[in-house]
Image (tube, rainbow, N blue to C red; front, side, top):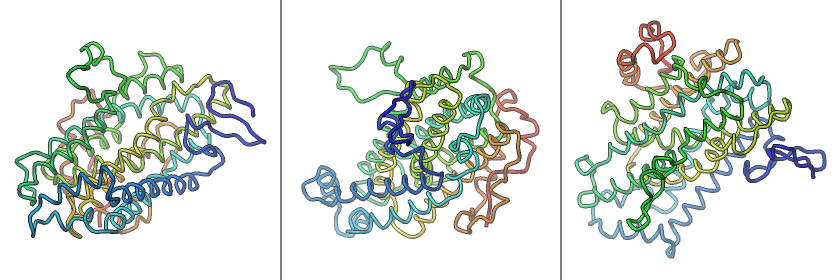
Length: 402
């Protein structure tokens, strides 16, 4: 076995492999983009079905938690009808929603595929890093906005259990936010000093380590948003916080729509960064790539947690359509963002989602987000977005409608 100097890969029997500390698939660099997507999908299915088995096992902590909750629900309470309490229904619901999300074309966007194959220069990766940073900066606030949609005054149908179900949802989302900010839970006795708390290793801090590895000076790390990046940030914020969208849609957007695909496309990016680093003899280390390594691992756990609590808010086919619609909105917006990034980074045209023969199941059924996004653009200061005046005046949006 030959370990490469930057510890990102090693050679064994003529094959270039990746250590488990970098990625759970040691054959990451042996796969093509489709093969990687399939491997990540299969892994997520296994992980979730293990969780379902744990929920259904009488001696498990999860089973006891939800059994106690159900025991408090009087006869006729709609809580008895959610998938979580019907044997086999939770797995069926997950497999349907998971297939819907992970079959969307965004996860094999030409940008991800090109970078994964190593068909990018070091300078092109630097351009990407600076402009994608604006997405990293803003994602976590969307989760925080979604937490606020679940509260004691909201209209849940579970009577005396409304508050507890709302709180369980908040806990799941709060863990996502805590991981983004690099903080955990503390007892009063071991609560950290304020200085320690404010110096937590956030994902923004981790991303700046990536800049360090690429040789991007601190003065060059922050830039105005590309219009499509701004649209994606606004779409996330609107779905999570605008009352035009239901709490269930908010939950789906920051949970299923965000968390399920991230391990896959961050794996594509990670594989590409390793290839470029080896080719360019760049001293890129696991420290520099920590934000991508962490998302591959943590977001699998996030996705399972959020799927479980989302099921508590789904009681029929209309709710399934609402969840899929929210995910469709978010995935269309991400595709839009990656298309402009492709054009900016590589200086070449890239087809938009509207130029494809998009399956009907991924087309939006109403235009709430189109109206909300156009209105939101007008509220953004000109200096925040590149070409802001033309962006605000544009009638184009990321979405494809029925």
